[in-house]
Image (cartoon, rainbow, N blue to C red; front, side):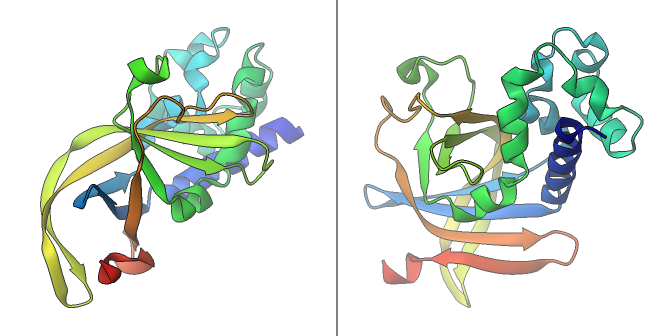
Length: 216
C-alpha cells in the first residue's frame, strides 16, 4: 500500500476509535455556563474527511458516509483508488491530521460560536474549536460541529451537583487545516472551557480532562 493510502486508512481507524468516545464540555462566558456533548458518528465521516470533494470519484461522492466508512475499514473500498483522485490534494492535509483527532479534542480550551457570515465562509455549523496542528505547528486546526439536538442532564463535580443544564449535542461536520487564514478573526470572543470529561461508551469509564469549575 502506498504511503498516502496507508495514512487514509490510519486516520479512518483513528476516527473509528472516536465513535466510542463522548465528551461533556462546559464553557463559561460573561459569567454564564453552557454545556455541550461532542458525539462522533459514521454519518459525519464523509464531510469530516472531505471525501465529498473528490468529484472524479462518483462512486464515493454518491455513496452514503456510513457505507464509505465501513467499506474502507473492511477493505472493500481500496484506499489507493481514493488517494489517486485528481482532487485528493485538496483534502490530503486534513486526512493526515485527523489521525490526531482525539488529541485535538482532548486538548482544546476555547469554543467559538460559529457565524459563517462574519467569517465569510460557506461552512455550516454551530460551534468551532481551534487548535494547533500536531503534524506541523505552523498550521492551525479548526473543527466545526453542528447541532444534533439537546438533552437535559445534571452536571456533577464528584458528588456535588453544579446544576441542571440543557446540553447541546454537537456532531462534527468539517475539519480544516489552514496555514494562513484565521477562521476566528471576525468572530466574537470565545467561551473558555472550564470542564471537560471523556466517556468510554463501551466501558462507561469517565476521565476528567479538565476541571476549573470548582474554582469558580
